[in-house]
Length: 291
Image (cartoon, rainbow, N blue to C red; front, side, top):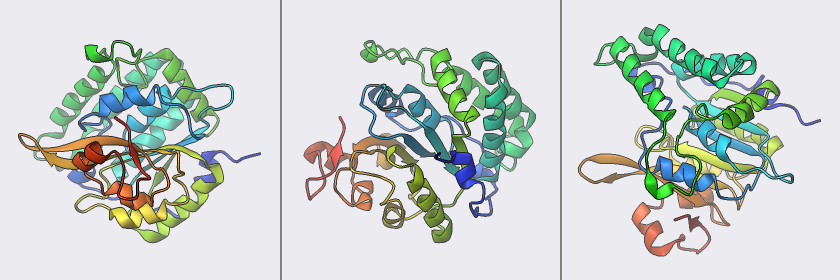
């Protein structure tokens, strides 16, 4: 029998978790195009049985809308972050999800946890921790509502959160109860931890999608190093979700969705949005941007 993700990662050597305002608790994605990505992922066919993503709820949001069939279904979600605050929230959230009687009660748990631990989650920031926590709960509440983007009226997923729909909630609860939603404290800059994590994740391949957000920007992990370490996990059909920075009336993180193809993973991680839109592939013609 294939071990659950929690059992696989239970003895994983974990990075010393980081602290500080930069590593606070932020569950919702603020990346441009994230809603469009969610809608696309609700329609694209499954390519694997496990999802992997960094931090927050966006990985769970995408996992919850993946269209399963009798032949292919999602069997696990591996969450990763290097923040001590995210680690505290996620591990408590996963355990509570196993026993929560309903999605509404689970929503209340999220609100209570954020507000009651405001000083820990947001301490040290320029704004008062209580103020940040309250604003963040408001953002969480918005994720439970219809987004009002009428250009996606043919898509049933108008709200973004996995907690906004009973079917999506029950799907994630089933995985949690089976021990197949896990959280690992991994810094993608640290070779020994990322290598061990990738090796164990191979046991549950193939990977359906990988969400890396902007972890290899600025002070985060180098894209070439991360791509090399994850090479054996992210297969040719795996959907790859990441972000790049661009300027449009200010600095923004623009989310992009690609299918890895035969290209080296690091080669598609470094492509600009403009280049992908113009050419639809990398220089070798193997990585595809999904419009």
